[in-house]
Amino acid sequence: MEKPTSFTYRGDRQIGVLLIHGFSGSTKELTGLGRILHEQGLTVHAPLLKGHGLTPEEMGKTTWVDWWGSVKEGYQQLVREGCTSIFVIGHSMGGLLALKLAQYEKIEGIVTLCAAMKVRDKRFAIVSLLQHMIPYKRRKKPKADYIERELYIYDRVPLKCIVSLHKLITNVQKMVHYVKQPILIIQSDLDETVDPLSGNILYQRVGSEEKELVTFKDSTHMITLDLEKEMVFDRVQKFLLDRIEKKVSLLNVQ
Image 1 (cartoon, rainbow, N blue to C red):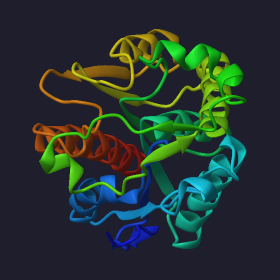
Image 2 (tube, rainbow, N blue to C red):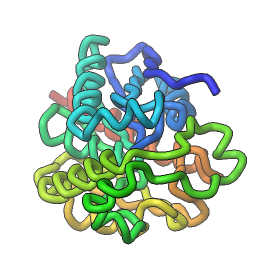
Image 3 (cartoon, rainbow, N blue to C red):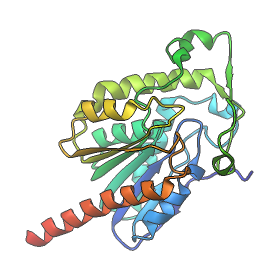
């Protein structure tokens, strides 16, 4: 399979969208959503997080601080593209990084897709001990064929990176009440990776006054590739366009 890369779709408006993929994932999972948003004239940029889209060994050389650095650079890329208003959308771990970015940068709105506020694997809490005995976690059974063919797959993931993900989750859980921007929280009921309660946890803890939780009952963790993806894209698009229209109306009044 062709290796994934960062991508940028340049629009004709000064409005940018930063797309952030998940842990051990890649930008391939977000191309469909990116194209839909670009059709609205938005500039869309999706950075490939450091250590991702390469090999498990390369990923093992990175931590969440490196992935966070890729996100910050992605934001600056949109600034260099001339975007004066920027939205951020993150899937899974990307949702955590989106929330963290919103604490430090000027963000118009946030969309999280199955944000990893809580994971299903009960071994997650003791992974810091297991990493010294088992360097890699082997991949579980494949996903549905129509999802599998769209993914760039590792056959194993470094446990030291899972330990780092655990640290990121803890970090975001402690600071998420500082996030005040409008937020759309999307969660799949059939999520096999992230505990479906993650959506409710984020809704309760985030500091935003304008917030909405939307669940999709027939989707798994890879919600941007699953059966309800068109409905997910429509909901994300509506959230962004509503905020853009509201801001334009406010500027016209002023």
